[in-house]
Structure formats: C-alpha cells, structure tokens
Image (cartoon, rainbow, N blue to C red; front, side, top):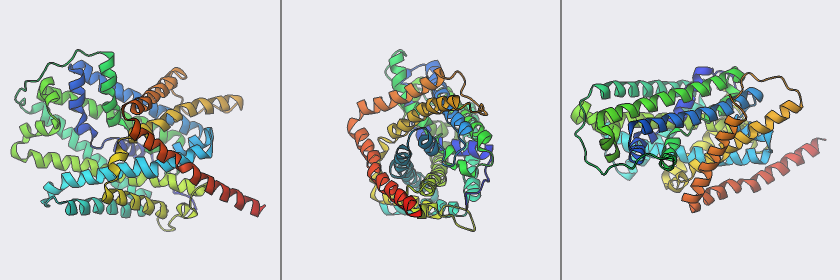
Length: 442
C-alpha cells in the first residue's frame, strides 16, 4: 500500500506559503528598519530575501524534476550522497526543526488566542490551548492528506485575505504619531548582511513542500511550479506589508516599535486593534502548526519504507491512506516539547540546522547533474536558470548563514549539530537490521 496522490500545484504552493509565514513577519520588519534606515534599502532587503528563497526553491524544483522520489529532500540527499545523511536529515526534522517549530508555534498561538477567546492567561490554560491545537491537527491529518491539505489550504487562504485586508486598511489609515529616534546608520554591505539574517529567518520554511512528493499527482511538474509560486506569493506579501508599514509609521516609527503591525492596526481600528491583531497572529501560527504536522510525518514514513526506521512508521491506515504512526509520534514529541518548554534552546539553532541541509541540497544538484550527464539521462522538465553560477551562489549563501550562526552562537549551534550527529548510531542500528533481514531472505 502506498501514499495516495491527491495533491496538485495549488496545494504545493499553499503548503509552501504555510511553511514560511509564521510569526517572523510580525516582528522582523522593525529589526530590518533599524539596521538599514531607508525605504529603498529595507524593501530591497525583503526583495533580495525572496530572490534567495526563490533560488533555493528552484534548486529543489530541479532536484524534484530529475528525481521525482518519495520523501522530497530526504530522498534527494539519499540519492546524491548516502542513506546515512538522509537519515540524519529526517532525525533533525523529528527532534529539532519540525517538532521544535510546531511546539513553539503552538505555545505562541495560545498566548495570542487566549485574550481573543476570553480565556484567562495562566500557564495551565495556555498549555491546554496549545496541546488542544496540536491534537486537533493530529486528528485532521490522520483523516488523510486531502483532509490535512484542505485544512491547511483553508487557513492559508484566510491568512492571505487577512494580510490583504491589513494592507488596504494600512494604506487608508492615518499616519501614526511620529516617533523620535536616533538616526539610523547609512546602509552598507555589512549592515545589509546583518539585516538579511532576520529576513531569511522570516522566509525559512519553503522546503516542506517536497516532503509530500509521494502524494502529488504529477511531482515532476507540480513540485517546481508549486514551490516557485509559493515563494513568489510570500515575497509579494512580505514586500507589500513592509511598504505599508513604512507608509503608515515612517522609518523612525517602524524602527522604534517591536509591534509594527499592531501599531498600524491600532491607528486603523482603535481600541479593538489588539484583538484583531491577536486573531490574525493566532491564525498565522495555527496555520503553521497545521503545516508542520501535515508535512514532516511523510519523511518519517519514507524512512520506515526504506527500512531505516521503525517498520510501524511505514504503515498506512487502510481507510485514509495516512501514515498514522508517523503522525502520532510527531504529535507526541511536539506535545512533550510544548509541556516541557525545552524547545526554547532548540529554536536558537533551527535556522542553522535547516540551512545546513539546504546547503547540501545545492551540492546535491551538482552531484546529480554530473551523474545524469555521465549516464546520458534525458533533460529534466525544468532547470535552475544560470546554473552553475546561481546554484553555487545559493550554496555559498546557505554556507555563510551556517558559518554565521556558528560564529554568533557557537554553543547552541554545536548542540544542534550534536543532536543531528546523535542520529548516526541510530542509523547504524537500523542499517544493520536491514542488512540482517536481507541476508536471511537470501
């Protein structure tokens, strides 16, 4: 029994948008404004972040066109390098990126949703609300990929409409009172590099669209198209939001606040602004939780199919076709992190861990291209424009982010790498078991 192919290009695009837009856009515009200080530099940084993300999405798109394999990036790494590297990528998703990201988003959702719902904010009530969100999406995703994708798509459409409404109202709203702050430094390449870190953090998350490749009707065409459309959609939203923030608050006002969207909403909506912004942020975070619980279990399922993880992970529900065990295990880990709050430190190096494997995706494209040229393979459906220069540029950018994280937060980064490396002994155990089963059959 295999996963059922029920998704199309629009589903991939919305999954991509859902994997990117979380809480970052509500905080980072003010950080970027403080670093750069002029409208052209600020908007240029957000456009550049979108172009870098688009380039990475095109790298994954060509890998999908050349290797339409189940498991997405997990499978590309396995095919280009070694199953051990693919395994530790899945291990990283399970214990750092996807579980930690979903746990933090669930807790943040509870914090924003409680006042909107009229719930008294206590540690117990917030924890219960966060766990309820995780359990809700676990149940929905257990009904199958179509149910999970429909829910994800519904949240994304609502989120896009909410942002569109905010942009329109922000353009019509009167300007917020001017704020006096110290003059921003003149933009420079050094300051642009510093500002790009929060920008790229806000764009991070366009890779999970590949994880559901086994459930896409035509992955060779739909995955590249969906990834590109998703990143372009996010870029349009981010640039438009920053443009209206500059319009409504001015550079000084944007740089001085830590809640720019709330400030604009307060001018536009008055006393109810806090509830409106809280509802929009909660909606955004809820969609992000849904995205993580939809996509990541498909990687663990493929690890089970490959015989490199527990066999139960490869079992599908005969009625829904969903990898129930993988979904439940993911939910258990997310809830554990949510309750223990131990995910706080994990979040410090999610970005470096993700970009480590995105860097390897760029290297993988060089490896697979060379292999296909040697084997005289037919040309793929799509190619990365201006390869090898563009692919090398993306790989170098990803490397610089990983190196920057190591320089800025060496302890957290090394702990993250330690968690990733801890998957190697686990891989060795399952690999030995796989060989033993193969030898017994022979």
